[in-house]
Image (cartoon, rainbow, N blue to C red; front, side):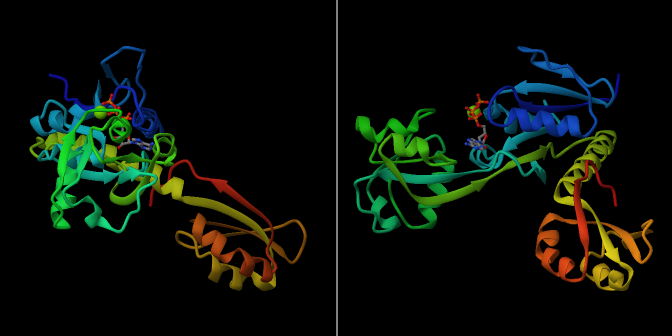
Length: 286
Ligand code: ATP
Ligand code: MG
């Protein structure tokens, strides 16, 4: 039998585009025509299953899929026994409690004895318990924001990104209870040959993520300032220095995080650096 692992990704929704982009950035090629539920990569031993995100933690726990990409909110809510292998940095959102706009909010005890509608009963229950609040939880699977206006519940607990959906439904966010991003999860009992493929994939994901968080920076520096500039942008091993055609000047190249670059920009200019270029890095292996 061909040695191939299975990855479950969301079929369509707020996780799918970034999940597939990450896989492509890892150099993995596959065909995903509309409506396809399975696809095999052409240049990496992996098969994709396109599923609803609700089903991904369960499929990975049962070993139907070896890996999955899912939001932490869904992962914690489903409470399945899987490994979290890597935070992926996309589909960031938060779960919050919200109440009708006109209500005064004195603090979490507002919810004592109240009814709350949510699609995340477990996360909400854990949160309320940890704050010694007893409230009635109404589990509904969608359009949670409508619950207070139709008299189903007095508050809601739902995913918020900008807050505009809440506002449109006459609600205001009062407590953030959970922060989420996409994660790569894995089955607990993978055979060694599967783990070896997973390691290869993780190596590529790390290279892509490192590349994204770092920049290649080039600048012209008067030779007298080179040592000062090197202190400011030490780079991976050390910066590259190339002489310019104009005597007394060099081009200094280095790799650094974007934050580090912005922190040091004024000092670099004060040291005499000019013609500064910041270039994206596609992949980075160190
Ligand atoms: P499915 O049909 O697969 O069950 P869904 O409707 O449950 O999809 P989506 O709305 O596609 O789910 O959201 C998928 C995941 O993306 C959420 O569980 C959450 O982790 C994340 N997410 C949700 N809303 C946002 C948002 N506004 N911004 C960023 N990420 C979000
Ligand atoms: Mg879902």
